[in-house]
Amino acid sequence: MALAVVLAIGIAELPKNGASGPSGGSQTQPSPLTRSAMQARLAGSPAVLAALHARGGELLELGGGTSAWQTQLKTLKGWPLVVNKWASWCVPCQGERAVFQQASTSWGRRVAFLGLDSGDTSRSDAAAFLKATPVSYPSYYDGSGTLGRAVTDSSFTPVTVFVAKNGSKFIHQGPYTTTKALERDIERYAVGA
Image (cartoon, rainbow, N blue to C red; front, side, top):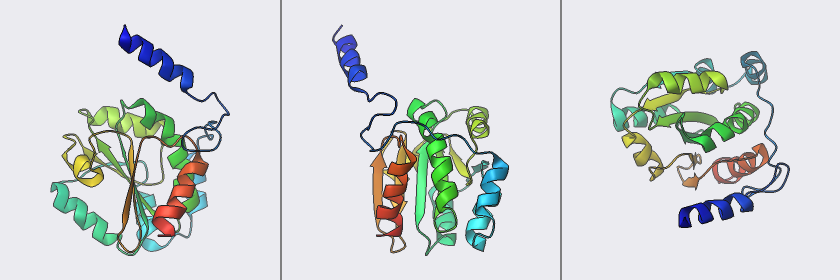
């Protein structure tokens, strides 16, 4: 009974469509982009970022765990980085997918993006999730969640990690409900830091 009361209060406090939320800005979701529209917007990206765009929407195996992840990050050294940890069953992750699609396409010539599927026990569920709303960057499969906890200091999803060129990190726990809020944090924590 107490749980039902807490849930009812929580739902009543959620912002209505178009209202400002905790991440700021309108709650209206951006329209999804097609794969070809993303590629057109990202044409001419620097080589290291173009390599990520070429694998956009793919779910990759990361044999070697944390050391393989660190090797991947070394290839991106000197570039601002945004890592989005998600899982296909995570409703807030589903809600922020179009936001990440828009922001990664807008910033993808200056900022590296990576996804980390942390917690899906089925690769097919994760792949279907990526296919439904593709993004311009690859995601790595972390079925055990071990890498996700190491990268984000959290077992929850979604979590976004911003890494500046100088290596400083900022971790945002929870979903981004607007492109404006995500882009503000990209500017603040990845590009401007």
